Length: 110
Length: 112
Image (cartoon, rainbow over all chains, first blue to last red; front, side, top):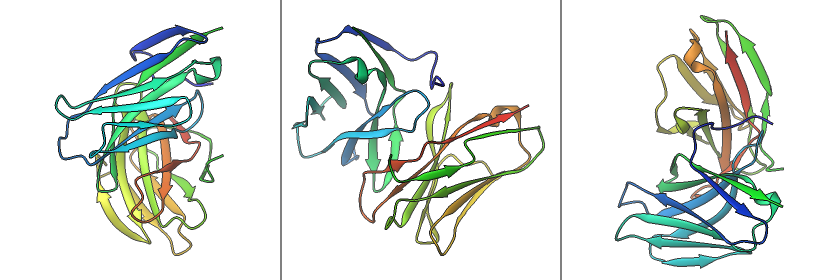
């Protein structure tokens, strides 16, 4: 597959561990935040979203936390699996336009 | 499979040339977005079309243009290509008022 970024922050975890990926956003007026996963050679794939009036949202094995005070977003992945290895992007929405963060590469070792 | 298709998958061309990238959105989606992904700039929003009309513009160069046709497919035209235009170009689509965008597999453009 093709690499989407050779200089991304990287998080290396063992299979079964919990992973936490962090993101700082810039626009305090953003009303919607999304996490995307991008596997090598593929387009970004929606994982989970959260509206600005929420602090926490849970999905299947994933939780997103939003701290508007410090403009910080995090993605928690429970029981990380090798298939979770990918680049993860946070995105903030202003109307329908998304602004993506730089991304974090998650490497999961079996 | 997101339901968004893009062609071609790979494109190799020379500086100064012009290319056209094509995107078909998910069935029923009226909004189409174009993004450029490069190693140094990350994923950058270029332009959005909704039902044939330009809706929002991002960091799109004047050498680049796009359009959305009545059948809702979209084309991104890149002209006077430079080495720095080498990147992955993604198309995404969404339903009206929906923040969730579905991305295609991308077109890898290499300018030599």
